[in-house]
Structures are given as C-alpha cells and as structure tokens.
Image (cartoon, rainbow, N blue to C red):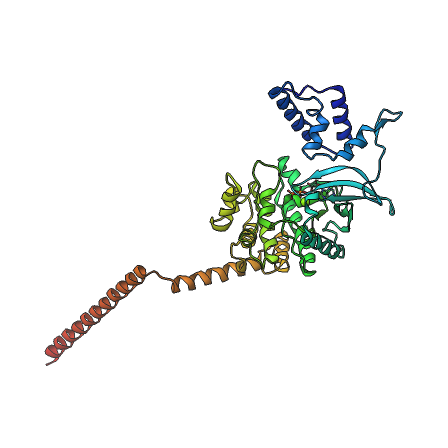
Length: 424
Ligand SMILES: Nc1ncnc2c1ncn2[C@@H]1O[C@H](COP(=O)(O)OP(=O)(O)OP(=O)(O)O)[C@@H](O)[C@H]1O
Ligand SMILES: [Mg+2]
C-alpha cells in the first residue's frame, strides 16, 4: 500500500507525537493509510479535514488538547522537541503514551509530589455518565491500593479531573507476556513455571484479600527486565460484563476471548476465584504449547469451545511438556469449576512440587476424585438400552452357571454310580 501524501507539517506532527509517546508508529501508519484512502476517494475534500492531525483527533488517537500542545511545541537548542507541558492531571506530569487497550489509554507520568514515575490509566469519557460504574471504579481502586505484593502492579491512586477519571499505578519498566508471545519468544519449561508461579502468588495474595481479577491474560502480565513478574489491572473495575470486555479486546479484527472462564461467558453472578485459576491455566497452556487452548473464526466460536469442546491435552501439541505440567493445566481448565483447584494454595503447592521435579499431588487427587465421580455417574446414568444389554448379559451368565452346576452334579452322580457298581 502506498504512503499517504504527507505534508511537511503532517510529518512533523507525526514525528513529535511518536517522540512524545502519544501515539505509536503503527498508529501513524494506520492513519496515513486512512488519509490516503480519503483523498483518493474524494480528491475535492478539504485538505484540513483530511490532515493527519485531524484524523488522529477524529479517530480518538489523541485529544484536541494534546494536539494543541504539540502544535505549540518548539524545538530546543539540541533540536529535540519539547512540549510546553500543561498538566492535565493536577500533581502529575504526563510524559508519554505507554499503550492502549480496548477500554483505556495508559500514560507514563511523573508524580510531582514524590518525584517518581508512575503509570496512569485514563478512562474514556463515555464512562462518565455511568454512576454505578464510577462508584465501583473508586471503590475497587481504593481497596486495591491496600494490596501490597511484589508480583502485583501496585494501585496508587484514583481520581477525576473534569469529566476524566484516572487510575494511577506503579510504573513497570519492562514488557507484557503478550509482547513476548507476539514476538515469537519461546520459553523453556522452567521459565514458564517461574512466570506462572509468580502470577499464582499474586493471585493468592489478592484472593485472600477478597479480590477476583477476572481478566488474567498475557496482556495483563508484565515482566520487568530483572525477570520479576507483575500482574496488572488488579482492582480495576470494568464498565462492561466479562464477556463484553473479552469480545472488545483489541489486537485482532475480532475480540479474543481466549482466556475467559466458562462461568464468565455464561454471565454467572457468583463468579469466584476459580475463574482466575481457569484463565491462568489458559495462559499457561498458551505459553507451553504456543497455541491458545481454543481458537475459532470469531468470539462466539471461541466461547462455544470454552463451554463445550474437549481440551486438546497440551502434550499432544508439544510432546516435550512434562506430565506434571499437563495435569496441572488440565485441572486448572476443567469446565466444571468444582473439578478445578479449590484455591491458589493448592495450585501453588503443585507448581512448586513440579518445579522441584516431584509429582503434582493435588492434581492427582483431583483426577482420582474425578474418575471416581465419573464411574459413579456412569453407574447411575446407564441408558435404558445399555441397562437391558447388561441384564441380558447377566441372565446369560446365570444360565451358564446353572448349566455348569447341573453338568457338575450329573458328572458327580455318574461317578458315584460307577464307583458303587465297581465296589459292589
Ligand atoms: N503499570 C504499567 N506500567 C507500564 N506499562 C503499562 C502499565 N499498565 C499498562 N501498561 C502498558 O499499557 C498497555 C495497555 O494497557 P491496558 O491495560 O489499557 O490494555 P491491555 O491490558 O493491553 O488490553 P485490553 O484493554 O485489551 O485488556 C499494556 O499493554 C502495557 O504495555
Ligand atoms: Mg491491562
């Protein structure tokens, strides 16, 4: 695809926006393609409306105020562009965009009072008019700020400026697990276990404090350059149902509900910690096999499989995976949550056993219970045809026994008669 006819002005703005981290080079590329299409379809179009800046604002990549600040940016002596930064959020200086998900945009910022770098998630304005959500957003944010764990991205503050609501959190210098997966990184089993153990510790801490994450997935698992794993978005209330959030996820033409638990898909009201255990199992599966557990042409197909399809055992995809890991993943991903680990304590016990080269005893126990239960249920739920076949088989067996006994008696009597004749 050819490049859009960028004016000098357009390309300068694009460069400054990328430099400031407000947009990514991919964002600029997408907008340039749109600009090219607009101009090709309508050569008479007002060039101001088809300018890069106008499209960036119209399509929500940046706000008008951000654009205005960039337009007033001036080059300093070293030729670098600096912004005449006006603070958007009192107490914080925004430094650049870190990324954007389906629901919000995350910025790097300096917290002026403590002179430290933080990350700020800014919610789109459309959520402002949902008081029930805003209440939950503040409630959960404040509660999450009390969590304190090395493997959880710390929630620091929640607030509002104008009609914009924001969530301030610890800034993580590093990458997400999703970045690694999309870059094609291959993990060995030991590395995967280390990551999953750290996320399980994070969940264990949060679950004990009464939090359910509800959105455990590679995009929410960050890894620092020193290998410390941090679970992000803990305590971040969401404005939509789990199912809608999974469907709205960015990154593909369709939403990607690859890690969502069956009970979340069904919209059950009493979703509990075991939903996180399922999602962690699905993430674990992805890391060791290189494939998501269930895939399909659209979100409904993927969700249908979470509900109904049998999981292909991970070692069928990657035969090098140890049996212990397979067992753990299969227990985490049981469709019936009663057949999953009952808590992250149990899961952690198994993960640590496998890391030491021992068997996952809790998973084995669950397997034994499950196979006992399935034996019970087959005994209880025989279909009528099968019951009839069993009765017939039993009847033939009894007849055989009677005939054998009769033949035995006959043989005995003949033997007694012969013996009597000989003796007599
Ligand atoms: N605390 C943080 N420190 C540094 N970068 C962060 C932090 N939190 C989020 N990010 C970056 O911002 C990006 C967007 O995060 P966000 O939570 O909005 O969306 P997501 O989790 O990637 O996806 P989705 O909205 O689809 O669930 C992340 O992918 C990550 O690169
Ligand atoms: Mg996130």
